[in-house]
Image 1 (cartoon, rainbow, N blue to C red):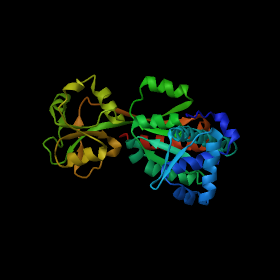
Image 2: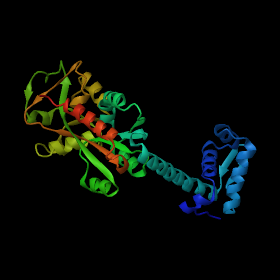
Image 3: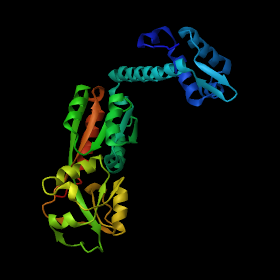
Length: 316
């Protein structure tokens, strides 16, 4: 027997029972879940029994190995997780009406801003807003968008161009978009490489062994857009495609080839920025925020700090 749970059901049962049930499924044990919830095992079992009576179906299969959800129990678990997320978001949104600055900021960032902009600037932010708590998770660009839409993050920070279709969808879902300015992506080589200290043209860059960020990340999208007017990106001599800027810089330090990386990520030890006439690859940075944070002083100050950080990466 399958169970369909609607949000209106929450008013008829204890939401804590659903939380308890989801924890039992996660840890696969009533005993372990009871310990984490600071409940006795019989008390937790009564909560599970109450849910089973409510829906008129068995929710857990018990054995010497622990417990696992029945088909109905798995459905309760999936819907229960959604209900918990909605209720938690509702609680936060109501709280922020009275104290916007005190809301916990859940920040999802793509790797470049998460690794090179946020660590220093968020220390400055904390000094200005000691009452604001925040958590940063570094995710691929697409996951940042997904986290915002799923409300598991209320702020997103990404580098690279955002496709128009995604921009329109984010705005439709009340996700506000704040440009933070643009830095640049530049070619780098080892200081002892044959190309060091020389001014090169686009034709030479065309032939060099290039080490690029992996496809679909913000930096790679910016590179492909930046090169499409000067070079056919499908004919570039790509030596390797690596996961992150640190890996590209490490490869350049072995004199494997020429890397294309954001200027703000460059470690100048053993590497130098090459002088390539005609090469201009802008790397935009963007902050995205849920509507509940749009006009809060905390968000405005964060935007100001991050804009200043981006501006500092652009040569005078």
